[in-house]
Amino acid sequence: GGRLSRGRCCFWSSRYLGAMRTSFYALAGVAALAAAPDAALAFSPSLLASPLTPSSRLVAASPSMLHARTSRPSTGLLGARAAASLPAETLSALGGDSSDVMLSGLNGLALSGIEYPTKKEVYAAIPEHCFKRDTIKSLMYAAISTAMTLACFAAGTQIPMKWAFAPVWALYAYVTGTVATGCWVVAHECGHGAFSDNKTIQDLVGYVLHTALLVPYFSWQRSHAVHHSKTNHLTEGETHVPYTMESGKKTLAKREFMRKIMGKTLGNFVYGFTRVISHLVFGWPAYLLAGVTGGPVRGLTNHFIPVKPFSTGEKNTELFPGQWKKKVWMSDVGILAMVGALAAAAVKFGVWRTLAVYAGPLTITNCWLVLYTWLQHTDTDVPHFESDNWNFIKGAFMSIDRPYGPIFNFLHHGIGSTHVVHHIDCTIPHYNAWEATDAVKAAFPKHYLYDPTPITKATWRVANKCVAVQKKGNQWVFKNDE
Image (cartoon, rainbow, N blue to C red):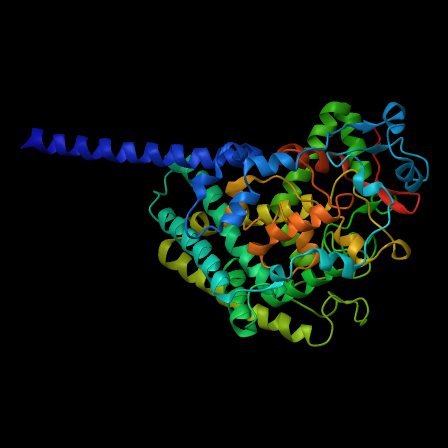
């Protein structure tokens, strides 16, 4: 009997350990993609093929198509040797001085100073059916993202709360947060009116999904609409508005101090690392609570309190004017309910388990959304403009599409690889954005921005080199002092 009992124990222990090893390796594989999202390109899109995945998305995300989008060679710091290769109109747009401008994989395309098409001309180039919303299809995508997220959360409830399982908890947080970002993107589409022609269904889905991720739905709907309306406007933009050399004196001094005490190489590394962490981990709550990177004209803002001191009180500059204040309070009701639900879970299951199951993945989701918005609107040779040299279409074309690969594009509905079209018309549903992107790329190859730089490398470049802008001709460009 003892031998039989020990045999059973060994049998179940072996099965348990085997299952844990399998889960660990699977999670590790997905985690590896976090370190290098571009590695996802090595996966065949056929792995994702299913009745739930439109073939048009798989074609658009196929390696051959993505290879076609990486034809621009990349360059480094633009010095005297490279300056001569720039087109005359680009040098002219930079005021003839390109000595301290660094090129990204865009090769200075956004700096060219060429004429931009009208909004009507751009819309005419996009097939009409791309603008149509399909409620059933949108609900299907919402259901897919929600089901996958809930499955991940359910798995998290089974992980033991022991230090030995810390690596598993870390992988769980990454995988679940990455999957949950799909829910975030669906809610984001609801806020744009890209989900359904039925406003009630649209706002209900968006409100529930965003509230579940502690995002004040209507508050963010408003601030994000402002962001779209003033993309890459130096003073009136909303989110990721850069410092000028004057307003950025403190952060520039901090970088200089690090260089002085650690040496230039190590100082730059530490400064870049702290920027990556501060942006990805703390950037989203800092924006919601204090309007960090929100632009100078609106001052201190808060997505939960739409009145002074978090409002200018002036119609033309306050972030939540008129009836939007009421909608902010409506958003707060949902957030308070969610906080209450989390508090109840903490009482029943324990604070640490609640934090491990919910807060870990939420942090990863927040990192993803900041990464997307940061990289889609920032790079060393993507300029910002003042009012006299800015218009809506010009700002929209300053958005950058990047190679996130078929896995992340599937999970996140292509938000990072179809971002230019998303800014041209944010009501285009994500499942039509691939076709619309190809149409825009074909019609306006000199305006469409696609940077083939691997995501990790692009993030490091942006964190290190995109600190403050200086005026070059009639545009504002990030100054590189190396």
